[in-house]
Length: 254
Length: 265
Image 1 (cartoon, rainbow over the protein chains, first blue to last red):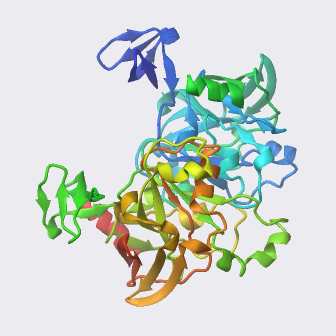
Image 2 (image 1 turned 60 degrees about the horizontal axis):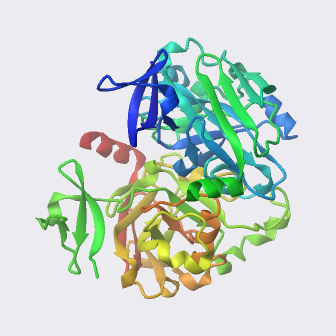
Image 3 (image 1 turned 120 degrees about the vertical axis):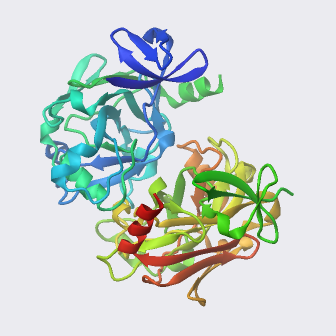
């Protein structure tokens, strides 16, 4: 099943995607055109840097010997179709298409061979970064990776059993319809079982926690007005639009 | 003045409480709780943002390296990190000493609890978004690098005791005068004064809310110690500040910590 969270007629609803409608727990059918998409979960968000060797070399960085992990604040999350704010006066803000493994049950000290049993499902994150703000302290910092509106997540969570092999999925980003980033989740340096073993050895992962597994090469600068679409085979399509800071603030105030 | 607000676990349920001057806790409906019938929870459930390298006198001791690799230049902006939900625990909760390390390091600090939704707040307005203050203990594994996010050192289960309760802002005349003391097994070991900050509380609120919206219940820990002391299983760590309270936690071995969690579940 595909599970989403949407705002409809002033209320938030957990829905299941059934063909062309969204079905609430009480059976109401909601037309997708009428909803505001919300991030499907709000657990701890753990993201990976440099987890595809082609992306690491694109940034002229060596691939890490152990996972490069950072945590994103839930305030940065936004949903499918929402606007993403590009700060004024920056030179380089790029998208990062990422497969997200959503944890399904508490995981502590889990071995790689057992790890997939702790995954509840998958979703997509566009883990935007503003490179102008990188500093070499706790890099990448919150100012780069934890900004309002710059962690679109969704549109939904696909149950684990619907994906035969999460390490054989095509992952692509289109900017204004042009293919800009293309890769396969098979090219992760540290795959999902490895990441669950590593992270659950540090902290207990809880249901709803999310591991955003890093991005392949092909990131590029995006500007106000750009439509950015991330697509992962079998999971879905996450679409967002870049707006200027001025427009973003005006819409918030309205 | 409203009372101090806390959260406790009572018979398996999280309950909001008001804590009186004499330390007694009562529910919002006025029911008084006796000391043995509850456990303290962290008084706030929002995002906890810590600020590293922010105590001027202590940064002097480590800044010689900041012009070399991998840093190349001293930090221009506050150095922020997140303590995820799994780290948070309350007053008197056990803190684990993982079996693979010799010691762990407490980091006694004042914590600022946000009282309202706060986006793009100027420093001069920053005091208006503060709801109150509590204490935080930023436990970590010993680390000597500030280059990568401190997940392996700071994000272990139980490494973020907070509490015991939130003191409303009206009861704190000037947080800059607050001295936070850390005692281990009764002995004074560390002291931090609020006036020593490189980025003060209003500057931090302006910086953070310039890119991320804070909500009521989010917490900023403006100054975790740079220099650290070591503690081991069996030690009791107390963080205290006049007018804010006393946050006490005992260090237990990793196995004991997780066995107790399982027994309670």
